[in-house]
Picture (cartoon, rainbow, N blue to C red):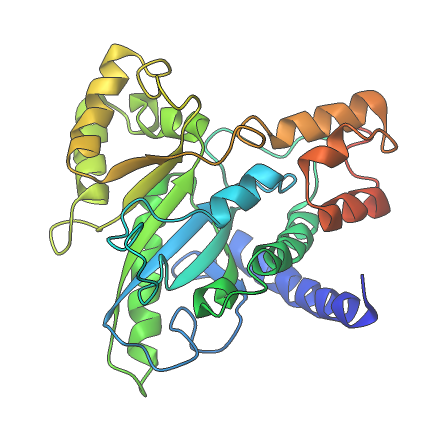
Amino acid sequence: MSTAAEDEMAATRASAAALLNRLQHGLSKPPVELVHVPHNRWPLPKSPPTRRSLKLLVLDASFNPPTLAHLALANSLSPFSNNIGAGDDSTPDYDAKLLLLSVRNADKALKPGDATYLQRLDMVEIFTRDIMHQHANSDAEETSNVAIAIIDEPTFVGKSTILQTFFKARSAATSEYPSYDTQLNFILGYDTLERLIQPRYYGSPERMLASLRKFLSPAPEGDNARIICARRASSSFPHSVLGSTDLAVAQEFISSERIAFIDIGEDVKGYSSSEVRNTIHRMGLDAKEWRMVVPSGIAEYIVRERLYVDMA
């Protein structure tokens, strides 16, 4: 890593520590903080926007650590784009991207040997460079319009509400441009989709359905969010993964095109952060097996910080 990059990371970490402390002590209203933005008008593009509705890709993950599967998700094309295959590159798949780290997860509490939140934010900052590097030859502004945020909310439905409140306030504060609406496109893996449609996270099946319908309904009645899920198997998913009840719930939103599926490649779809952690704990930092699963910059950081060696 270059000296300039190290200096930038040190500056970001100092500010991230203060923002994380503020968020965890309940001082952030709403409970979300931007840790890194490419420019002050984000999520607007640097150049004047051409429309009043912005499409945001939200990659919400634990980043413990970021893997090549995360990278494939972050750089995937939108299944909702009208221009795919039409040879028209005038409309970007997304106007901006947000890498979102939750400091309160519905299923994943910090464990001994895990990367701390600040270490994860270090890795996410490195990861943003990988996102942009994959499109180094592209002129699309969306490839560099990537931000990092932390949020204190465990559920997707709650995150959507918080982010919409946050973006409305941010839009109102951007006086040089007309106000804008945001459509949040949450991209996730199949295991996360399974959790999204489990009633235990909502209190009852009825409350789950009501919450999901508000979350995934078009504005103004709903949050206008969409879910993009990476398939586990290209032919049988989701039928081979979800039970009949879960599939019936998901099917309502699949039919209304609020949930869509993508393929991210056979070589990366099986990669997982837990695989990296377990391999390092079992085989050590010198093992090559785990290095194949993460971007090179992430691998260098893991070795430098000696992450995941002493897991419980």
